Image (tube, rainbow, N blue to C red; front, side):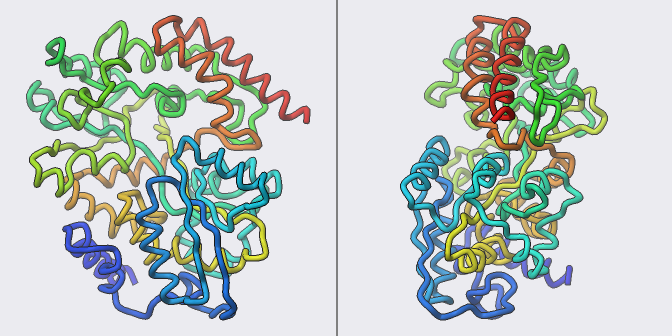
Length: 457
């Protein structure tokens, strides 16, 4: 089985990641029959009665889903899929508007930390029985990886259908390191090494300044640095009851990465420096940036190489902190099925999207990490090494195995951020108007108020 999978994936890699054609060519090259309405398992044909599915997808993924819908509906002519999308900043507001207006979609994109409040309100369907009936999903739902189970399960019920692994590593620009005569970082580096390297890479001034690193500018993108201290922002990452932002280790970590790197050390650009995109790691004037796989096409793709605008790069695990387990930020991201009369049909379509063929096509078009280790190891890692030059892409696997989600529960992470952590904490810290020590007590109080109100109700 493994050898068969490897051979099949290498043909996909050749045809698509080498730039030879569309995802439709990939599917055709793999041989075998087209998927039927039963999705990835191909086990049981559904009724031929006409079915219309409304699908709200994450903005930016439309191209992949249009390709997949065309393939699926060609094999299942009784199914019509109406695709709508919304940018990330507006996605959940649009979904809530549709639900409030009685136009809840049959299938919706979700991040692994945002679907739980919708489930708690009875909006989303339990897909546990569907999953149990399809053996393919045994490798998708690897509950030995904590971030998969936390991102997809609630109250023992399986809700999220993963389309990708989400995790973040340190990207580094080889030309910046080479020009400074600094060795590339390796997986055994520490937080002290990271700061030292950022200082060594920083040089010049004005329009010619090279920055060693790039600050993240948000709590959720600083979670790696926070968790690397061995502390976390809540008493529990799942359904927390107590806010614990104001711990000395967390305060120190946020002070360093959200303010000091930019304002007192000058090794990271300010928000003003990065306006308009003139200062960016892909522009050659930043040495390191904490990012996910989705950033690779901006660094070094065949298209960029043809234009002479590529930046050679690679990725390394995030630096080691006090926590010996070396947690990395990570989550599953994908789809959920709202309750309706079409849950069965929505599952058949969703299971095709998340199955071997659908997920390979999705990863091919979007550049995102597939949803299971077999696809990641045998298809994605060699493919992105060929297409983007990321020779160390296997580090994404190691990072995901160590990953922790941000926070999940009846209160979404976005609510904590928008109502408390951003306005009270990060806005004044990033503006250099207050230190982390000055604002984190108030952040704790505001987050605790949100928690108390929720649990009281």
